[in-house]
Length: 196
Image (cartoon, rainbow, N blue to C red; front, side, top):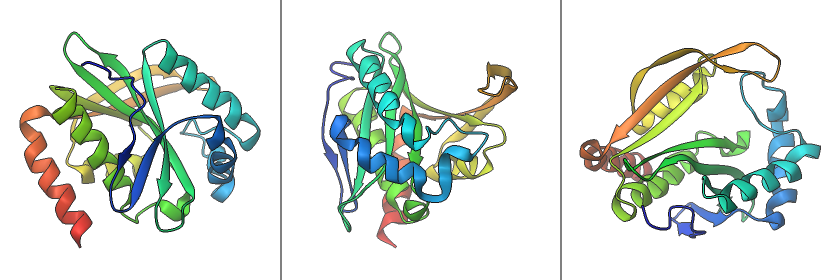
């Protein structure tokens, strides 16, 4: 798992994953304002005025070696359309989680998420040697659960009362994963989806 938190540019035909930086703050403010993503109660999307602090938090976690954050830029318009990370890195196993992801509503169901995950999974399995990649989401985030399943991830289970949510409620966390042996089929499935 050498250099898992290294700032590496990843690019496909639709998207470019750029190492997150302060220059992405304004673009991400527009992302969270579109459709008022930050008002969705079962996600942790920052309000526009909190985006700079969230970028700073992610960069501090990267400096501490616990996260690799990217801004996602769509290549058809040149606009920042979301953000995503590697997190919960376990170098001893090796495995990691792809999470803290959000996209502008206009970028959803366009192939941008599928290509983003194809690039990130390729780096995780092919470059970093991961044996598994995990995804987690809120039980009530049915859109995210369906998107993760469409990637080809399998549901491992539900961690009940796993987290205290920002409103004080307890979150049930749905855990999915892709194993190294499943990666070739997942990669083929994503490539097929993106070719259509």
